[in-house]
Image 1 (tube, rainbow, N blue to C red):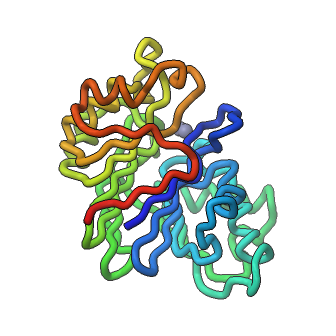
Image 2 (tube, rainbow, N blue to C red; image 1 turned 90 degrees about the horizontal axis):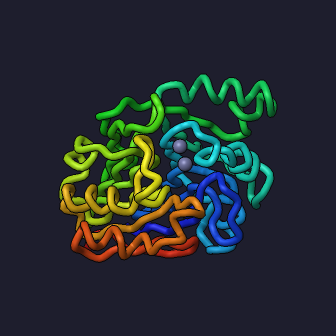
Length: 254
Ligand SMILES: [Zn+2]
Ligand SMILES: [Zn+2]
């Protein structure tokens, strides 16, 4: 399984980080985790086969996590050759169907009928769902918004856990136990800690409690970059920590 960080930023404008977006490839499955602003251009810049996306999984409905999803739907129809025929599966929290209906009121009915089959799947926290016969997606509630969830992607070589946006949560750490790569949000510096996001120290605690093999930090608001978030998290975690940059690639598991 290979992870490409498309966007390691947030809603805060940054010259180097676009909003939340991650590309995961395993076998013939190409999964886009979140689809914030900048996703389309980053996919082109980093050479991922964007037209071959099979699934999109959204963690929650904050705009920095799905604001560019309508662009993706439109691009798959009009932005490449040949126009897409095969289905696209979009996965998200309960309420996804309703949100997409509202988006169709704003942008047009093509949102729900983009010219290829759009399969909408709402998952509850705790669900497991097979993306194909070898890849399983699992979900876990996170303390951020009512609907927010973390995702785990497991194939025969390993397990990736992406927190989405979250505050500190022991239940999340237990659920992520023994993952090969923990992609954890790290929004704010320690002195600005709040209940709905993580600081470097809290991300380090999460990785330590989850016994993650590797910790990759992401979703940086500008103030957290004034410290060295990887070094702060590593002090608590004790393992190897990377502060993600847009374009970074990681192999997950064996
Ligand atoms: Zn966010
Ligand atoms: Zn959020």
